[in-house]
Amino acid sequence: MDHRPPSPRLSRKPAARQTAESWTFLREAARDLRTTGAVAPSSRALARTLTDPVTTRGPRPLSVLEAGAGTGAVTRTLLSRLPRGSHLDIVEANPRFTERLRRLVDHHPAPVIRHVRAEVHQAYVEELDTGRRYDVIVSGLPLTNFAPEQVDRIMALYLDLLHPGGTLTYFAYLGTRRARTLLAPRAEARRHAAVDQVVGAYQHRYATARWTVLANLPPAHVWELRCPSVDAAVPPHPLPLLPGVEQ
Ligand SMILES: C[S@@+](CC[C@H](N)C(=O)[O-])C[C@H]1O[C@@H](n2cnc3c(N)ncnc32)[C@H](O)[C@@H]1O
Image (tube, rainbow, N blue to C red; front, side, top):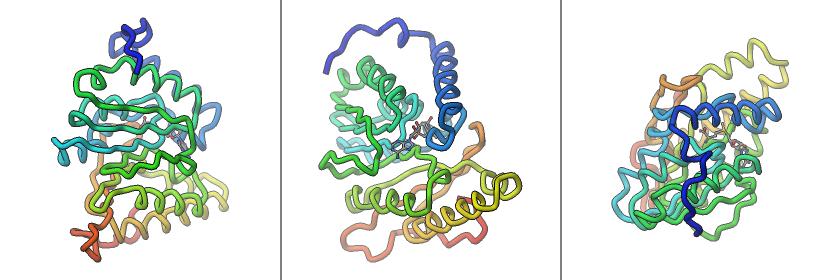
């Protein structure tokens, strides 16, 4: 990996960098809101909750996948928290974001100081083929914007890519289903409800925790799903099915 000195754009003070990232994000949202899935990058509070499993599973080296990394709000937190010798695959569909992510990885101290290996893949996660399995997957994909069949494929893929006992975290904004029911065409509201059903079935089977993060725009739920261990028929602490709870 090439470790050049920080470029002027990346050595900006955090506040200036955040503003620049927010503008990039907003521009991409205006271009394609369905795929971008948000109008602002995740907050530090949301990034920390999403990446907590890497601290609880350390300090052994981990194999981690981040899907839908955007401008790198969660990637940056992951890089700072990954145990020494870990491997991070970062997959992002938008080439304008991957360009940024490559610069972020190239100039972050974690690869040098803690021998973390990080690779950015410009691809749809559905098409990613690294040949690796993961201890932790952190997903930033806007699942509620996708077709139910696509969501089913992605959730099944995540569970397939996890080592037994591995952890998936992802978030869902609060209130989006209600907003769609009230404001969107009926077909859109039906699609969203169908996605909730698909995701709800995975949550019922594999969820081990859910947190609410209010310090994000908009506030979000973070879900943690666990791939069953080889010898376990059911996950260790399945959450009860929560009827009516928005995904
Ligand atoms: C809601 S943003 C989250 C960005 C970042 N993780 C954050 O929390 O600030 C979703 C990201 O997923 C990307 N994305 C959408 N569909 C994808 C797919 N099928 N495969 C990979 N990335 C995808 C979008 O381009 C966007 O950057």
